[in-house]
Image (tube, rainbow, N blue to C red; front, side, top):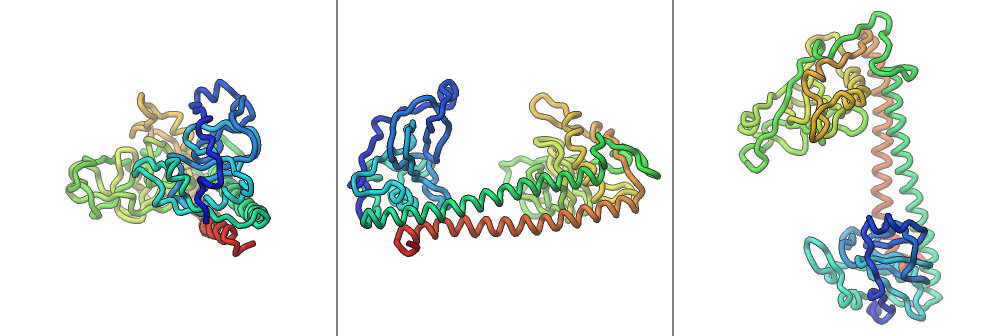
Length: 385
């Protein structure tokens, strides 16, 4: 193990920072490197050749899943948030970048709110220094493994994006077949009914956030952030709960389980269905079914598809918001109840399958993200080469 300062020449004095506006005025093809990687491209270069870029401040020093050191060969512009290092004779820059990404930075980084790796501390970082030929072998093998894992992670992300688009298409086609615009054609024996005639609309509130007595586990409390971003889903407790005093203080109403919750502010259009009695914040409305002529899951699908229409009708000068009158006037195209149930069941079966697939992708992603730094450490230490 050799101190980093012995193995590199530091070129930090030649760095010139450019903010986003300055970079926008200088478009080009030369990478502009920041603390966490390439942040854009400009029309000129300050450096050239094989370099190692090591974060100086605001880099993810304490996240083993993210890189703080990068190898670059070619023209480059670097700002003042990244150390620019040129490996000396006998050092492979690719190997050095991999080795630096295995370092535990806890005792070298200063600052609690904005971690900083000073030049003096950087120079003392311990770096393994096997023979150059061995470095080449390790670097080549590690590059191969990292590229393979990164491709798998990108493929999982692409699959997740495609699955989300497919789920939206499934829902839209189920309630608005053949690409019909909202509210869709009235089916045989179907009816058009405004939301206010099908549901009682219950508003919400938020108690004083700084009053600890208002918060607790007595009452489930849902905000727009607690509702699913994608397809409708069953929701229980939100990120925070209310005490009985908090419920009274914000004058919210607790509704029974089995009601719809729609976000009507920041953002508009998320939909969930409660599994427990709950109250909502002022950014949501709870929709309590008035009768037995609507299937809750079908209504949830309808309202999720209606999100663009709700956003179109939203008012507000600060941020879009749908008031009770506007929501109550939204017309729903309701087929016969048996048809609602059949459609909702078919869609929910598909969504359940997708949810299981999404869970499996998440598990695989977590394994790969943990495997990546462990495999790199093994390679750098010579166990994988």
